[in-house]
Image (cartoon, rainbow, N blue to C red; front, side, top):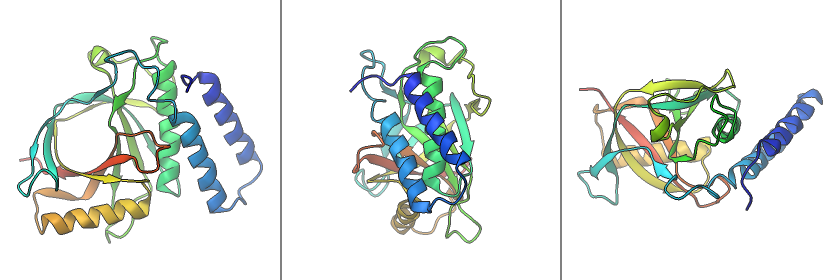
Length: 232
């Protein structure tokens, strides 16, 4: 697989604009299929051709949860700078697709230093539940951890929708799941995690994080659902 280029992203962006000009009568299924195609075209190359040692995770210290490592893990993430995009499309999949495309442009070259920054994992999608707890709120924040060598002075994004944010230290309970990430699967994983934890006020009830570690074109990719510990 070849390294992704800005021309590839431009071509995808042009296709999107042409379809928007054609009207808003497309079926939801057709729109969802197009966005997933964008995911695959853009993201299928994001794990190749990285210099050795450049792929890395955002730093964390972890320990098994009280019911065993297989169930979930508690981790502490230090403060750090992240590039973030917020989208509020009708579908969760649409929001993360569009945000990821913007972040890939920033990572590839559309930044103030004009160079490839390197991919880090996981990419985080911060979500919120409605008051009823039965649906996701529209807005989804997608975040890319700035590589260590740029943490002190992150390259500025060319896209005004991308914001560099200093995120506070974060303690989470993380549980692995596999497959596609849709609103349905995320709500199911949240419910399963709550069944495992039982009743507790130690974590937030309305805000969660979906951590993505694998190529989005891989059907059975590895993801995690993160429950966020309340500040002590």
